[in-house]
Image (cartoon, rainbow, N blue to C red; front, side, top):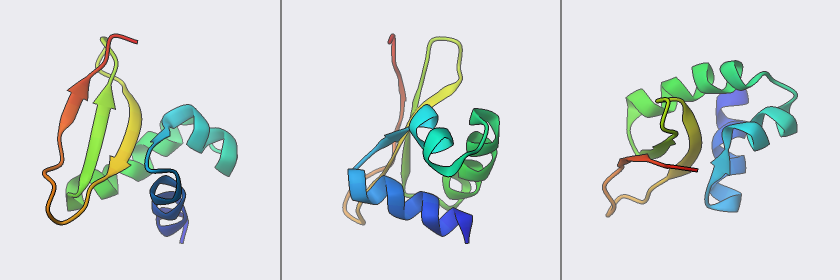
Length: 74
């Protein structure tokens, strides 16, 4: 159930940061990353990483888009 809620939240906003998700769902950031790993494995999820290799932001992509992993210098 929480996986679907995470997906719905991200889709409503077009993207969401790990900290936004953690705050909204009262989870730790590591907990969010662990749960979002399921969606990463299923595909259709673009992921943004910081320079340390930690996930910072998620975005679900449409059927005609290709999911990508991006490195951010933020």
